[in-house]
Amino acid sequence: MNRPCLLIFGHGYTANAFADYVRSIDWEIFGTTRNPQTADLLIKKGVKPLMWSDETKIKSVINRSDYILHSIPPTEIGDPVHKRFAETITSRSTNLSWFGYLSTTSVYGNHNGKWVDENIPVNPSSNRGLLRVKAENNWSSIKDLPLHIFRLAGIYGPNRSPLDKIRSGKAQLISKPGQFFSRIHVEDIARVLKASIEMPNHGSIYNVCDDMPAAPDEVLDYAAKLINYPDLPKVAFEEADLSPMAKSFYSENKRVKNDRIKSELKITLKYPNFETGLNALAEK
Image (cartoon, rainbow, N blue to C red; front, top):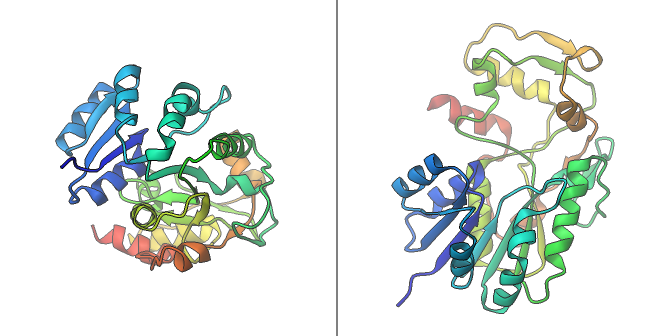
């Protein structure tokens, strides 16, 4: 009997955490990459690498996949997976059990600190949010595709957290009163994806975030105290030297609700707030 087959488009940080989480299950896991060094690392983790340039082999794996996770962000010229493989995925759609697309909460745009849920109409205020909406719509237009959209908040976890930013010497407390960001530990993303595969609901959209939106300076201050770091410099937002990308994040102020992952997928977050997440990371 053939093992269930999982294909991951874009084996980056989140996809890698998901593959690690389900590695104990008897699945055949493939992951696409452009980097030969990443391919070697995937082999060591029991993931079969697919070079992005090998279109024929990727199409062959699509045609026998049970589950597909798409984690490659769109660019100005569109969604690379949709552009190259939409036709193959469409022909396979009725035989797929699950197709997961990793989107972001940037599709909601700015709500001046108010709460948003999945029923709020998308209204992106940034170009990256607009590109995500277009990608979501492209996949939603494929008939019979067992699509599940996951709108991720800011992702943190091992080797990618406020603790690492502080240790790099690049952290500063940027003060912008009334600013809220939502975030999610990468392990909880993996748990949500696994739960969705076990309880598929085609066409569903899920916000994936923790219970506690918070100001970024509050989170950094907590992280600094955890590792007994000297007081971080505090800078008013208007005076901070930020990249255009960083400034665009601050232009969107909202608190994101996660009720649906709890009610539909029966998820109890392992890290329901930044404090529990950072405490666990600091102990490692």
